[in-house]
Each structure stands twice: as C-alpha cells, then as structure tokens.
Image 1 (spheres, rainbow, N blue to C red):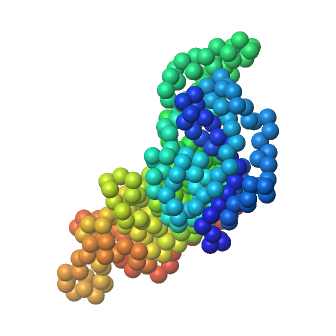
Image 2 (spheres, rainbow, N blue to C red; image 1 turned 90 degrees about the horizontal axis):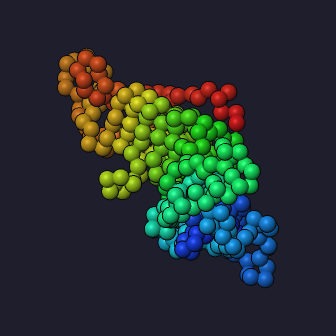
Length: 329
C-alpha cells in the first residue's frame, strides 16, 4: 500500500431541504494530490444528478472532494471519503485521522428508497408512498421500509470489496476494512475503522479500532473491546492464526498463535495464573499477572481451570488453521 496522505474524487451527495448532507457516494477515489480544476475529469453521474428535490425532499448533486488524511475532518463529504477509502482498502484502520467524524455526520433514516432526513420523516414517507401509489406501483413496492436510523450506513450500499463473503449486509458498516479471503458470517459485525488484515473468519463482533490478523477466527458471539465506549484509548488487536472462542471476549490484544477458550473474557485487569508444569507438579504456587502484562504476547492459550476456577495462561506451539474452502471468495 502506497504511503500517501491525500486522496480525491467525485462524489454524489444527497442534500436535504435544510441543506444538510445525508450521504455521499464515491464510485472511485484516487490516492495522491488532486489535479487542478482544468485537469479534473468529469464526474460522470449524468442523469443521477437533480438539483430539484425528489419525493424524499432530497437533492442529489456532484461534489469534488480532496482529503488530507492527517488533518481533522472538515465536512460530511470529507468524512464519507475517508470511510470509502477504508472500505476500498486504500488506507488501513488506525492510519488516518478520524477526529470529528461523529460531529461531521448527520443522523439519517436509511430506507429501501435511500436516505431521508430525520426531521419530518413521517410526512415525507407519506408523500412518497402516496406518489408511488398514484404511479401505479403495487402496495409492497410503494412502501418505504426503514433499515436503520444511524450516522453510518451499510458498507455494501457504497463499496463491495472483492474476494469477501458477507452473510448480512446490515452488520458491516461503511468504513470497515475487509481483506480478500475474509468471511463475515450472519452474526458477525465489523465497525468502521476496523477489520481484517488477511484471510479471516468473523463470526463475532469486531469493534471500532480493532484489527484481526491473517488466518485468525473470531468465534460466534465473541467480542473485542473497542474505544468508543467507556472512554478507553487503548486499541486492541488479534495477531495471526489466533482464535477467540465462541462467546469469549478480550480487553487486551492477542499476539500470534493464541487461543482464548470459549466463554472466557480476559480484560486488562484480569488476574491470570502463568502455568508452569514443574511448579504445578511440585505444588508450588503459580505466578499471577494481570491480563495487561500478557497483552500482545504470542503462543498463549487462555483457559479457565475447571477445577479451581482460576484463569490460566498456558504455552502453545502452533496456531490455528482455517478451512481454506470457506475462504475461496
């Protein structure tokens, strides 16, 4: 990946009656400095552009956007360009400045007929349904189904990265970074500025700021602490060929070739016995450390001793191997 800190491109923006930007779609983005005005290509949106309000009370206009990934976000168009760049694999998670993204994005009613403003949505919805019905559309087609009310849309409505499988598009936000070979199962979830750095199986939740290394598996119902809740600043990650078991969780990073057994949650403050075969055989108490002391370490099996209830860290020699047939996407 080129070490460039700028990108540019034409986007198609949806603007509500109050002048707020609801979304911006960038079919392509180009890394590097933007060309001068006379050298810019045409936007190519054609009939998709309409300056007058449509049935939703929305105008669709072309916007030319230049992004400095090191600077703070300046506008909704800037924010959408950064989210697109992540999902297009132009930049990796945690490598660009996303400061101010929540303030730049508007809360939007995402529907089967595109984005609506939250303000007066019920009236706009009624207008659209009446106009659709008067056009002779069948009742089912005339209805407006709400998918979510959120600041972040579904990634697949804007970017479809090659070589991935996604069981449920509602569970991957725009701004997710999914490497080729990744499979996100129906119960999996990937937030913006998070994702996979290689072939991975995602059956659990990958929070904002979290990256999962090549050959690793996030089991069903598993979760990884992010930075959006609780005021935490530490970014957790999972290394290569590691397994976070079903319904397990971590508030620390896993290194390479690690396993957290199913149902076990390891946080930075968790007291963990460091298993030593000779000490255990001699009846000598095992050393006890905090989870933070083992964060990012390789070749560890985290388990709960079923006899004593103590959480233990045991050495491992090899990592896990994914089923290659499941990742030929």
